[in-house]
Amino acid sequence: MKKKQERSNFLTHNLGKSNLIKMMKPIKNIFSKLLFILPAFLLISCQNSNQPESKANDFWSHKFYVINNVSYVENGNNLQKLDLYLQGEYVGEPKYVETDSIPRKILIYIHGGGWAVGDKMTSMNYFLHFLEKGWHVVSINYTLAKDGENASGIPTAVNDVKMALEWICQHAEQYHIDLNNVALGGESAGGQLSLIAGLYNTNPQTIDNSGYREMNIRAIINWFGVIDIENFFYHIMTDQQKNNFTEEAKEELSVISKEFSPINFVSEKAPSIITIHGNEDSVVPVEQAYALHKALDSVHVKNELLVFKGGKHVGFTDMQWEEAFSTIFEFVSN
Image: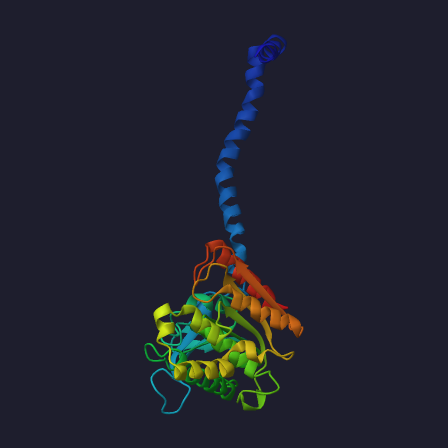
């Protein structure tokens, strides 16, 4: 405080008050101009900071359009339908939509729900970001099992998915789909369906019967999917259900598990697979994910397992969701 006072006295004594005031006027004018310019500068800075959001390669809601409820089976049931999310642009009347003629990568997404519930529109949060990245997306419905007969419905669901993939191959040129750049994805039961469809199409023992061989499935995005069907059902059964499980039912489950469990069809030809799972998933135990990726490692297939601490079945934090999608896009781009 004393030094500050001495400095003030020095200026006043040597320069005089009148001279000091004259010297201060230009400084005051400069500050006035700065106060006038600063808000404009800040406004321009804010606008410039938002410029990357309007780059031409960013995709917003006006960059794709939707065709709902397309039947992939002639005279099929009301669940054998799919939704097409196609890159394009709304251009106004009279045409309204300008279709993108560039063949694009496609994510084929299959919803979960224990093979008995769910819908192709309820899983948009798993594929919306692919639309923002410029991918086509097809979201598939399939015939659902009757209540309490979940396992028995798996063969029909798998067959429906195969028919949907065949339909996509047949209409790839019409909808500008790049069949050389296909990813499959699904959560829970949908994870099992996407995995089995992708593995059928690459396993030397099953590829001839897949019906969609011209589709090059480069990656599978498995959100906490069922890997071993038999183990999964024994895990979710109550003690009473296990006690009431007949030998006939056990045999049926064993056969279904053998034919449709992804773990049984891993080969060195398998597509790249990334799995997202929570270590506290009480529905599909994380051990299923570990088993799949151990099998993939054993045949040297590119794969990644992302296990979130505290993650539950469809239960992740915002930061975990962000990390999941960041990792997914890095995975599918390599």
